[in-house]
Image 1 (spheres, rainbow, N blue to C red):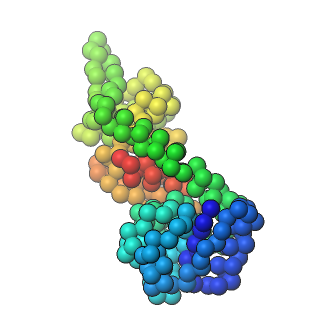
Image 2 (image 1 turned 135 degrees about the vertical axis):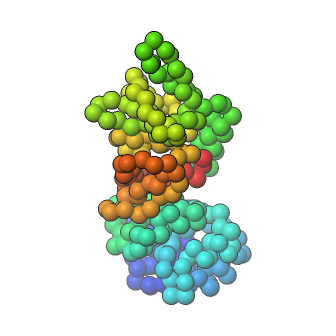
Image 3 (image 1 turned 180 degrees about the vertical axis):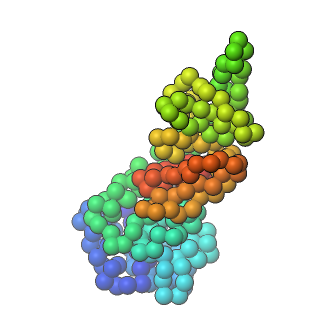
Length: 247
């Protein structure tokens, strides 16, 4: 596997290079690039590389400027001491985000993730998304006295658990008590809805934006009024952002 490193601090670049090669001896470090200017020049020649490890803050700007300028299509693992750029990182072909000082374990996990996201896996995921998009949104059945009412998922902003009861919350701010467990609804409504955490299953149409929160979590801003905070844990951030970009 052919890798380049974008890092303006030479000792850190050398340390990262050693770490990568200790984990993946068959890898080849094709270049170490210290600036935005040199990064644009290098990548504009469409080099034969498989993966980029990149710092974000460089001496002459942000590495995002490189990827925007050359319309980068190569997966990027960002290594940085600054965690406020998570969302922009995943708009720049980012597949993982490692906070400095990085550990061998963090680099190993990022490399493993790259392997899992190789073309075959990516193609299968895209096919799953495409298949579901050609199908109509599932519905749930609610009971109101003797009435049986079907409610389309298109009208449901989120499902949540309250006092061990699963509730559907619609875009018109109505609540409906449901029978199925959240785990079953998660399977039924994939990939239209995402399991943000144990309590919440969110419709993509209800997500307005996401922001950094404490302990590397992200907090969701919905396009409806909802009284509770909805957080995505740090271990699910990458997965959530991939889902968000696919829908």
